[in-house]
Image 1: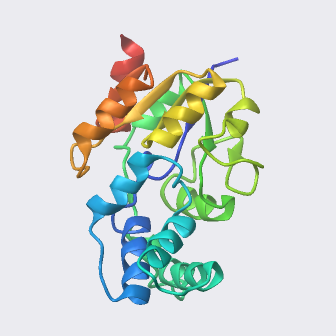
Image 2 (image 1 turned 120 degrees about the vertical axis):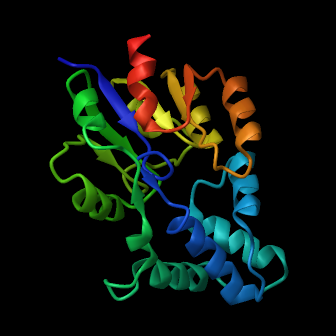
Amino acid sequence: MKPLLVFDMDGVLVDVTESYRETISRTVEHFTGTRIPNETIQEFKNQGGWNDDWKLSHHIVTGVGVDASFDEVKAHFQNLFHGNGSDGLILREKWVARPGVLEKLNRQFRFALFTGRPKEEAALTLNRFAPEIVFDPILGMYEVQNHKPAPDGLLTMQAAFYVGDTIDDARCAKAANVPFIGIAAPSNPLYVDLVFLFQETGAYAIVDDINYLDEVFAS
């Protein structure tokens, strides 16, 4: 049986700069009147513990003294993200893998997905961009009791590698004793900081995006 390559989704399989990250910015702006840049969001991500974008949005909103409940913030976030089905920010997501890249990797590995998204939202994106590629199992936020950086999700799999883009992903892999491959896109506003964080956690490899994974496994 082929070894199992486990992917995170956001920032790994899909570029979420104009979807999840934009939704955080607009949600914060709605409640506070002030728009935050992507760099500020990345600062929180680099701190660790902010894998849940709903909780991060609520934390930023209440952190400046706005009295808004978590449910209010989450509801506004989801309305922006999904819209009416034809205008949600989820539709701004961009698939990262170039044609043939995942198909080539799939000859060497089985694929699985461990993401902080709800499983249903992950399925929407996979069905849109890569309906022919099998990810099994798919674990989302409601399939694990403790979220990343807790290793719960990875511990349920016989993962050969975990591919992620945040320090929470790296710490999760380390806790599960699974080799971690870090995605650090040069466009990331805190690219150098992220690379150092991955190095500190003992990343197996660090690449710009998943189109370079074949080079990792060829070496």
